[in-house]
Amino acid sequence: MRPIVGGTGVDQQTRCAHWSSEVDVVAIRFCCCGAFYACHTCHQEAADHPAEVWPRDRFDEQAILCGVCGSTLSIADYLTVTACPSCAAPFNPRCALHAHLYFEVPTS
Image 1 (cartoon, rainbow, N blue to C red):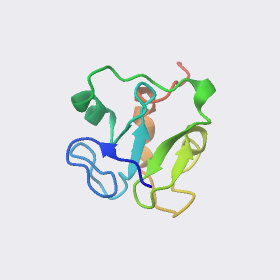
Image 2 (cartoon, rainbow, N blue to C red):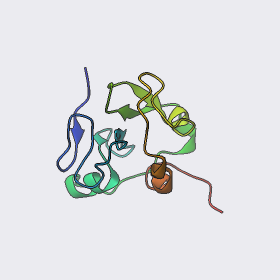
Image 3 (cartoon, rainbow, N blue to C red):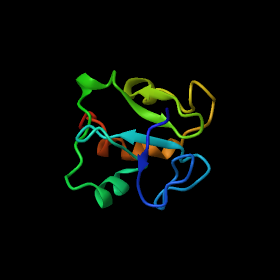
Image 4 (cartoon, helix red, strand yellow):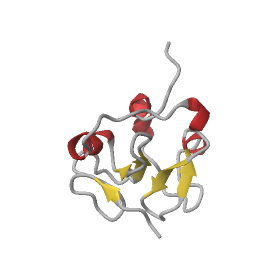
């Protein structure tokens, strides 16, 4: 069964009021609460707590939802692909600019 995705104006493929292009089809299960949200702003608007990033030692967890086919990916897999491994739906490459909001990333 497909998980519920929280957020503002979330459509059937997990696009939201903040990110709604053709390739914005990824939802993220937040480490702090275990709930899926369409984006960090959706979490900020709806949750009663601050977001926490996923630590590197938990990147094997299935925390990414493809909004097109409903399959889940581990964080480690998601960080290495540009499209869903199950249905080939392209993911927004610009999401990498916001990775630090979701995942522990190396600091330069």
